Length: 141
Image (tube, rainbow, N blue to C red; front, side, top):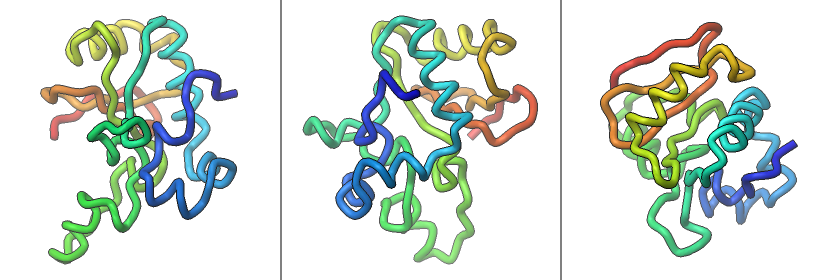
């Protein structure tokens, strides 16, 4: 089912080292993975989520676990944090050769073709997409 992504792109290094490839895939909502594959095929451009596995700086754009800095910071401040990322239902990404605004515009225009309803975040320099909805939605950070 997943042809255009490797699991290291979607999880942190800590999660990958602890659970390995096979178990890590099980942490994700299948609707999210199907939507990502559809978007990748339709745009016919590389999508970048995490890059830690190739020496890059992104490690928290996919699944976020309790040791991810974003989650940890909220935990030590006693803040509840149940984002789509924590639940395996959301990712942040970039598309090669496209601005985030252009990708969001494409997603909005093609929302009826994308297999599962999704949400996208407005007014950010990346694309946040998740399946935490029963109908298409946009939201602000």
